[in-house]
Image (cartoon, rainbow, N blue to C red):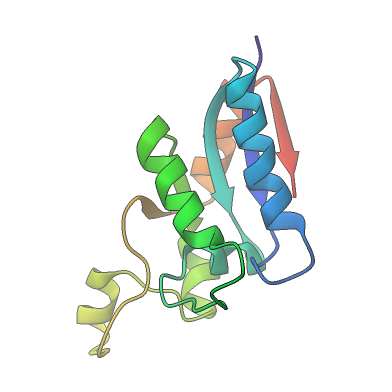
Length: 129
């Protein structure tokens, strides 16, 4: 079986890329493959925004990523620079910048680009969505 990592560069509400990434992870796990991690970059960091509020008849991709990351202990890495530029901040950043709230929480984790390089090194394939 193969070890995969994913690079998600699209927001959950942009076309179908982020949803396709989620479906790929689910399918790969069902087939016995290993997922080393998911790295959210550029607009993809919006997948980690816990303040998303979709319609009741829409698939909740945020909740799906949280469940997947928690259930299978898959690292959900969010590029800290891309996230901060797009207003996706964790609790510590909110405190340091005197913000009222934060919208990035576990199992998502802010990391640097070095984490993407590490995922590339331990994976057989890196797939971008």
